[in-house]
Amino acid sequence: MVAADEALRIGLFGGTFDPVHQGHIELALHVLARCRLDRLLFIPALLPPHKQQPVASFAHRAGMIEAALADCRQTDGRVRCSRIEERLPAPSYTLNTVRALISEEAGCRYSLVIGADSLLDLPHWHRIDELLQTVDLIVVKRDEIDRAAVDRALAALTPAFVPNPGHCDRWHGQGGRIALYLDDIELPVSSSAIREELAKGMAPALLPPSVLAHVRRHRLYGWKEAV
Ligand code: ATP
Image (cartoon, rainbow, N blue to C red):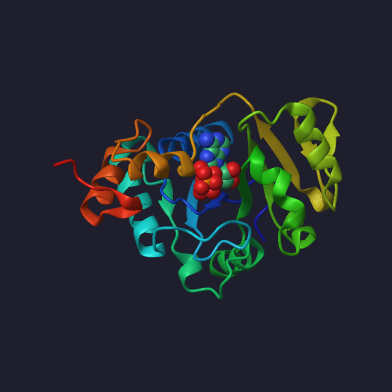
């Protein structure tokens, strides 16, 4: 058996990624470095249970993540895209995904990486109590959601997370699980805003160039070349 502190530490960054943007990429790199993870997986959802259904197909969304990561030299191969949800039953419940990953690679310590908006939504996730006993949480600041709202959301979860008196950005859950909050990065960008710009024929500043090339090649999100 591998001791918890010797286990490979893997971050799981799920989402619709419709499309992946520079905020997602910077968040992934920041979490990788700050939380000393060995690996971080982008996990595009086949059919997200908590959100509107994606505009682009799974193949396009995964392809855009792979293109953006291929362009990003800083990742050292430690940030990858996992297409696991393509093979799992829909809708894409995170608990099922995490269990499938654990059955493929046991002995790792998995952390779910989410923006603070997703933290507020966690109580609605499928079998959230089991999920919170299976993974650690890494929450990243987003939008106007402040520290007090993060505190309240973590305390209201079942099982609840309690603050660690020695570390203001760390909470304890059940069974040795921890939650970390990173507020030293803020990325004011969203996929929906990017889709709106693309539909107007604009090239969004926070869209990685390889993702814009993919959008143009396949005319996604209503993109039309200017004549
Ligand atoms: P949309 O605008 O369509 O809702 P999105 O930009 O939120 O999309 P998702 O693919 O839904 O992108 O997000 C995946 C995960 O990344 C979620 O946990 C979300 O909270 C987080 N996330 C996305 N963008 C940011 C951001 N700018 N700052 C912090 N977290 C983010």
